[in-house]
Length: 95
Image (tube, one colour):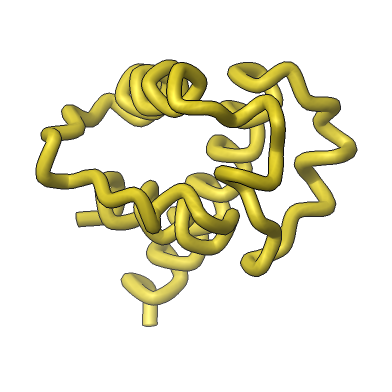
């Protein structure tokens, strides 16, 4: 039970941190990012999230979560929706 609670707390921390990274990196209002659901489209739907912003976003994820992202860790689909991006961040940080 305790490890399940830690996992949920970890997931909440990843979600909150990822939302802050998106707001900071893309210059979005935190209130806007707070409304993102798992189905919120990102790449191709947010003009702020272009290919250059993806590189900046990956660097911010590495710095904030203290992880190293290898080229083979990243797939284009990871940036399709907020849910996909959150799953990507959780895979990197909650291993």
